[in-house]
Structures are given as structure tokens and as C-alpha cells.
Image 1 (spheres, rainbow, N blue to C red):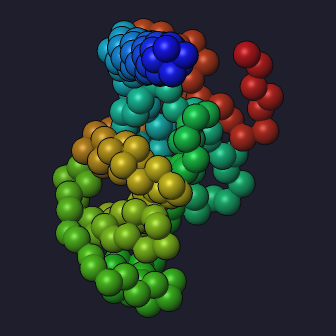
Image 2: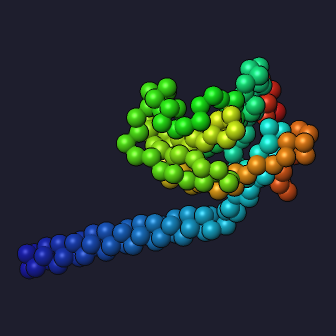
Image 3: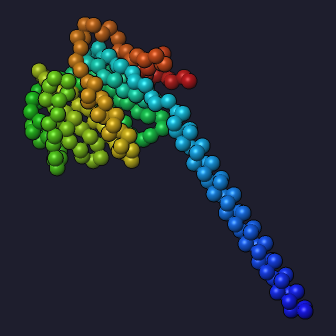
Length: 206
């Protein structure tokens, strides 16, 4: 009799333990599903970045996402017409754009002088001129020459290759020449920003 009672109690205890484990697993699964749904909703509700159009007094314009910070270097070298840097407050990496006078007119000469030997070079269009693009040291470099001017766009990918590659493509595709006479000051415009271009040495106040 005692043995039967012991067996019954053991079965009851085992059943209770199994039910408890099942309940805990079910609660954890429900919490995980809720967390996933919350993340999906957050991603879907986050508005995509809009674009800014930047006009440079040296005679070109580009568009770039408005969540990037543009810094314009104060020029002291008369052979440099413009020098810009685009950075993100959330992701490492950057894009540097430089327009300068140059006696070089051929990419092979430029590569030799700069001691660069990329494994592969692609010919692309930068606005209406020919440009050469290659990847070296985890950077996408785009070099073009036009009437004594060298244009370089260097994208440092860091560990955010997909992010910066996409923005690099946007910069390249939106790059176009404008009449410098029509640009009084470097400007960057969109509907959501008032202070768009930061000059090197300025204090950023938020």
C-alpha cells in the first residue's frame, strides 16, 4: 500500500515538474516572438534617410544621405580647389572628395607616381568624363582627370562595406559639374536641415 502511494506521489511530482518546464518554455517562446515583432515594427517605422544636394564653389554638385556629416577643409594650398569629408555618427568609415590642379592626365602615370598596384581597375563615368575605380587597402578609390584637374573620391569602408559602398555609388552617380559662377557659397539643402556643412575647425553645437 505504501509502495503504491509512493509511486502515485512520484508520478504526480514528475507531472508537475514536466508541466512547469513546458509552461516556462512556452512563456520564453512568447517573449521571443514579441521581441522579434517589436524589432520588425521599429525597423519598419523608422523613416529612410532623405538626401541632401551639395553645391561646391569649385564647380560640382553631389547628393548624399542627410544622416551624414559633411566637413569642408579650409584650403590654404592654391592648387587645391575643394576638399570634403563625409562621415557617419553611427558607423565607422568615411568618404573623402578632393579637387585639385594636376599635371597628370593618365591613370597609369598616377598609379606609378603614387606607387599603387590595384589587382583590378574598372572604367566608369563620373558625370560626363572617364574615371578609373579600384579597391585597395579596404578603400574604394575613384580617380578622374579633366583639363588639368584631378578629381579623387576615396571611400574608406572600415567594417561597414555594404553601407559605405552604397553611399559611394550614390556619390558617383550624382556627381555632376556646374558653373562655378552660379555657386556663391558651398551649400547643402534639404527640407530637414539648417546647418549642413561644417567647416574644419568649427565647433559643432547641438
